[in-house]
Image 1 (tube, helix red, strand yellow):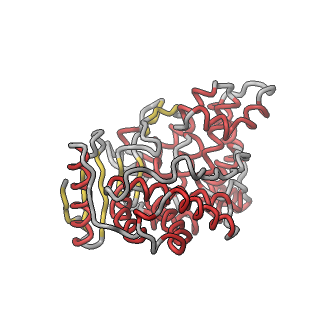
Image 2 (spheres, rainbow, N blue to C red):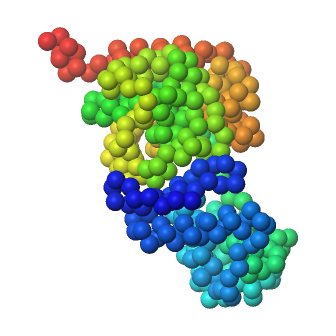
Length: 372
């Protein structure tokens, strides 16, 4: 456990989980960092001897505030934001109640209230998942002896639309060319890493030059709140095949950057705000123009479809994407069925052909400029 002041003036808490994972969280104020440091230290110390932290009687609002200190130090900002939104639905129902008074029937009543309010299934699921998380925290804080929701309330699972429309390789190259024309060189490489290597955007932003080989990419980090964490979304590292056309682009980008031996492939300037601004101001207009999806994350489907068209088995596709095989099959099952009776397409050749095809599609002004 340690608290350090960063060069930017913020305060960083660093600690190691029992499984050996190194974690960190940045705060604007020293007071908040010290508070989080104490809370995490207590959790880790008592966990080692099998003792739960104890507190006086709490209302659910107080329990949420107590849980949030640890949550903000350990969860991604998007996850915390989702729970914060869920709490707005939950607080009017249970916030005033004492934790020890919330029993099984009370949890069932809470689920009924959410249902009668007309909330969608995804919102109900997220809100009840937060309630379950808070009650687990209450057990750790020795507020209650057992989980009152267990066996009483079934969290509704949202029906997700799993149909995906993978962008064609030509669309990825057109998007990359559009970004380059707008002098967004780093954004161009980000798009290519997501579209042709299947990296999640946060994984691409955390990619280090030491992870880039001649034939593979090593994916074992992710960028969260401007800080690189030594783990991916699923907690597992993976090795991704590096297509020759993408390898050529990375070599050219590395030369442009002065042949760095290490350091972030996409540079040091990315954080949550910078990424959101780039997505809104640079990516979305360019993607709309070329028809390449609405989110950078959607470009991963292009890489998945390339592997499926190459007739790789589900285990290999899942391993390349960092998915569980069941999730991969659930997400891309219809793509596999669509391509099952088609001819086998070599991914490297398909990407290279698309690159040459798009490269030949020069606008008249571009051709005139090259003629001069």
